[in-house]
Length: 518
Image (cartoon, rainbow, N blue to C red; front, side):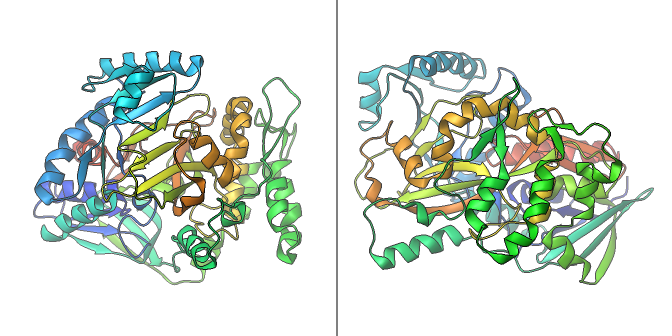
């Protein structure tokens, strides 16, 4: 196999780790990393709590568990060699109820089966010995769980690529991929300006200047409304999220919203029963969700059509595009499943110099409510953060708190798998809906297991958008899934521990891409 030019599309932590892996395996090849952002780690990779996730609740012997273990094995010596901050601070998963305590027993069994070192259960007294301010009936303790700086790690991977002769081309948006016999043509254009990824922090600065520190006010979180999301549905599968009420509550008085309100309503009304994902009987093809999505380009797609397009040919192309993975796969002729649904994750910082938390204290994971987990994390720089507060995003790359992307919303609402996921989780998710849409309620939930946190010291922190792959049946795809056709390899999904597993994922992806062309 002759490979002289390689393109890696996507400069998140896994993309640059992959480019680094390829430069090591093909030292004579010219490796180029493309990204439409202006830097590495501009999206999910640069907006995390920094937890080196050992996947305590991963199924015993699962690919996710093995990848995370290999990822940590590769990560520890790398950060030590490169001088990247890394601190083993320990992690507590704290149970508040007997049901949660029972789940901890199951998680312990999984963690032990996956050879996670030192894990054990702690009673109330032992909890306070490890974390004096934690409160719960039982806790699972993982003493070797660590925190690191994933932004610095991503930048270090990128510097390795440069040192090996590779190049990065930022501000370049890949618009299409054409697979040929022994090469791949990459179509591209200049990227539109990136949205503000620091909007949450800007809001926090406004509050500090105003001197209002009395409580975590809901007006600091304009992405959501104080009222819980509207859940509705009349069949046995349970209610689902209705976007129209949420959007109307936020933008109902604005003229532009009134012009598109009917369109938003039509997207939801495509289904006789949204919870089941069934379309209206006999709906013609042009009325089906997929067809309408094609007719309603996103704001970025419309802007892109106005920019001139160029093309280059490569011997090997690997796409690790995160939020745009499904769209690029579909454009290249791959199956459209799994689809990407974006979830916004807000983090909060705590202005408190006292040692309220020594390491990581979190809630007990629950498969029935996959996005309701909360943690308090002491970072590598000593700062304290709360999060994530996670909810369905109104745009794949919308970090600002004052708008949404209609095309991205059409992609979500027009996807039957999303409605099935919503139906499967809504009954239990409804109990925590208020904390998902109200920052003060979120902090109140955190204070149940760390009551020493002073709500008046909590400030808005970073905002990230998670690219969650979901299949047509509504199941979350939380594993490394890679598809190869000829000289093109597409990374369709990454595990939850994607940042922790970056070096291990790079090994696996490179193996598949190169073996397919051996």
